Image (cartoon, rainbow, N blue to C red; front, side):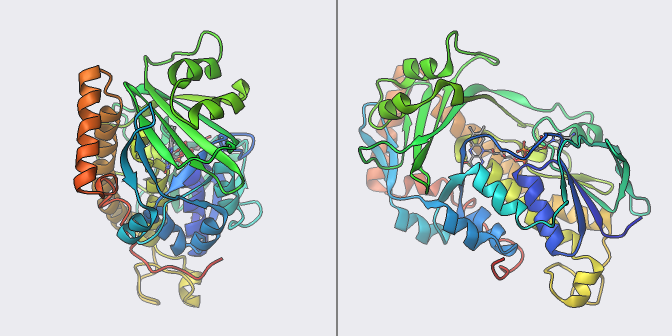
Length: 413
Ligand SMILES: Cc1cc2nc3c(=O)[nH]c(=O)nc-3n(C[C@H](O)[C@H](O)[C@H](O)COP(=O)(O)OP(=O)(O)OC[C@H]3O[C@@H](n4cnc5c(N)ncnc54)[C@H](O)[C@@H]3O)c2cc1C
């Protein structure tokens, strides 16, 4: 077995971040992605200070903050436009040690891939776990070009993870969360607006600016699984949100029906018994898919990646050169022991992500309340509490956005 060969299955945000973190630790990394190219869905993604600090560890935080829009003052509104709770960007940055930033997913994928050596990512390469391996035997992965032996396999193959099913066949897998989402990226409306998330009866709409003059808007509504609009998804959005406050109608007017993304929301409400087996570590949505209500799914995948690289430690060469962060003091115990190091990864990540999956589900349930009296009560409570304690919206992110990685930031790449 090549001692420091790592195979990453899946080139989503989690897999790419893990690949960069391991590469920086001197591992020889191959990323296998079944899609023909790396084009991510045409949507934005919000990264809170927790994920940014993880990206700082691998030297990419400054680049990210350069290319992203920093979220300004905004808050929660009712469909007619009334503000229910205001958020203050300066207070948020002070509370969590940095801003929330928003960028297009394609920009994030570019930042991550540009930190990998040429040829590290193989597209059109569907991979399957053949053997998870153990402390004394390598893991084996089948690829279209034959089998690969690896000292470490990172299974970052998303919510429908075949690797998860192979490792934990008794786990019930993803469950429908009772709602569907829409996402669009369009030029910013002419009339100014503040970033907002607006909660109505059984539905919500959010609008956030990107740095390039466009905006990212997302919507969610309670719906049966597998539903599709009888005409097109723009028409559906107009029916659900067409009479909501500015800038929603202007955004819908600018929307091309062919570019509306609609996805049902599934999550993993039942935690896995572990995030590893043998030499395989599960990461991101494969390990802990969550509702998007806290905007943390990708953030947690990024945290996972950096924590995993910390626990498996640097490859021997990097250890000798002293360039890589890791749990083993230079020259003492550079070798990776899967049963010890991946158990430490599970111990770090499973309780934290389980709590966030649950919180996202609770927040999602409140967001999707549909009965008029419950919605009225929710609005009254949100505005009353936020008047007396302006940190209401922010408080929901305590313990999440203030997370700090186990290693110090690196110099920028
Ligand atoms: C509406 C919505 C809004 C969201 N907003 C946010 C947000 O603002 N902030 C945030 O942090 N998160 C957000 N999320 C969640 C976030 O998108 C996910 O948590 C994140 O993308 C998961 O990344 P991943 O790398 O784990 O998985 P994925 O992105 O699903 O990547 C998995 C990859 O594995 C590949 N793959 C699968 N099987 C194989 C195989 N056998 N061989 C090779 N490759 C394979 C797939 O093709 C895919 O490229 C949102 C989600 C939704 C639905």
